Image (cartoon, rainbow, N blue to C red):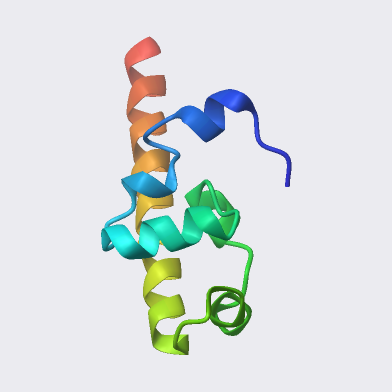
Length: 84
């Protein structure tokens, strides 16, 4: 998945925006996951293997990415409504 520089640098689109412990965010960044969007297409079992964490922790990470994606989507809708 190719990301634009703006997507990688945007706080709203960053792994740092996820509601997770700092250590998990650092682990995600160390393993090459820079945006929540990258986490949405990977199964929890595979993420657990990549990160070296329990399946349950991988599921929590993916759930946080889904919450963040939903929030970003809602913010986009609000901004589009204000333009109209």
